[in-house]
Length: 94
Image (cartoon, rainbow, N blue to C red):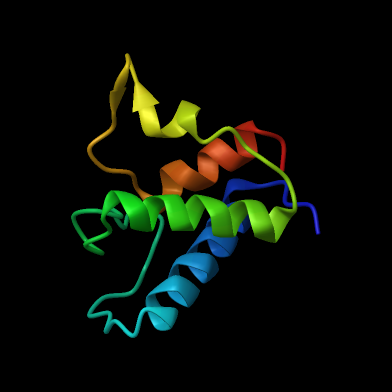
């Protein structure tokens, strides 16, 4: 199903994040929103972010080149919001 708007993309990313958290058997204290930070709020490690990227690619059945999202000026970004991931997907034409 194509997604055209950021809010739709956010819903998909939130669903995938929630599925990962559930698969890992973690308890979530707060609701995941577009403002939720993957590292600060959800304690994601770098490997968790990679798993999220893979899950997103599997969901949409295509590659996105997440290096453009994960790196800035040759360095890895320190954190990402769910909304930023959704915006990236919209920018990539989902």
